[in-house]
Length: 293
Image 1 (cartoon, helix red, strand yellow):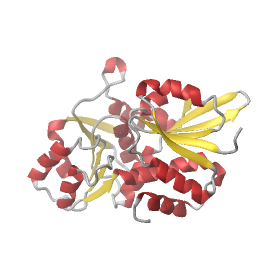
Image 2 (cartoon, rainbow, N blue to C red):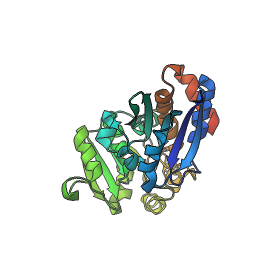
Image 3 (tube, rainbow, N blue to C red):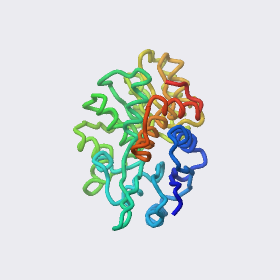
Image 4 (cartoon, rainbow, N blue to C red):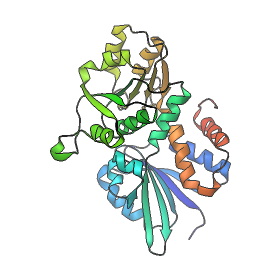
C-alpha cells in the first residue's frame, strides 16, 4: 500500500469546484501527504462509488456536493448526529480496520454557513429567510438555528417531502428535529420577504434567483445592515447579490461558505496533523483569491 492518502470532491457536474484548490493548499501547509481530486459521479452511481472506495485502503476522505448529498448519506455506514438530523451529508471519513472499512458521514455545511455569516457581521437571532428547499436549505435551517433563530421562513417553487406520505417537507422535518419552526411560503412572496429579513440565504443553483432579483430591485428597499449569502459563487456577483448590494446590504459569496466548510473537512481528514487554524484559513484564502482573515 502506498503511504500517500487519497481524498476527492464528488459531484455532477464537478469541473467548476474550487475544493481542490482549498484542500491542496491546506495539506501543503500542514505537510499532510494526501492527493485531492475532483471526480464526476452521477447521482445513480453514488452507492456503487461508495462500495468501490471502501475496498481501496488509500482513501482518507470525500467531500460531497450536489446532487449527491442525500444519495451518499444512504450509502455510508453511519452518520454523525447533525448529518442524521439533516438527512444529507457533505463529508465522508474512512476508518480502515481488520474488520473492514467504515464510512462515516458528516455535514460541515452548517458550520460553513454560520462562520461565513458571522464573518460578514450577521447578528444573533436574525429574522432569517431561506430561498430554495433542497439539501443546502436543510443545512441553512440548522445554521440559522445555531445563530439563535427559533423560526425560519422558507420560500421555494416546490417543496419535496420525505415525511409520512410525503406530508412533511424535508426542511420542515429538519426544523422539527432541531426545534425550529419552519414556515413554508410561496415563491411569489419571496421578494417582499427578502426586503424585510435580517439574513437571507439563497440556496438556488447559479442564476436561479435572477428573476427574483428584478422583483426585489423594484421594491427599492433599504437593506443597510442586512446580509445576503448566495451559496452559488459562479458567476459572482450573482444578480441577486448585485441588487442587494446596491440597496445597501452586505453580500457574502458562496465561496466564503465553501472556505469555512472546507476548513472543518480538513480538520476531519488530517486528524492530529491539523494545527494553527488561522494560518490554514489564510493559505486557503490565498488559494482561491479571498481576502485573508
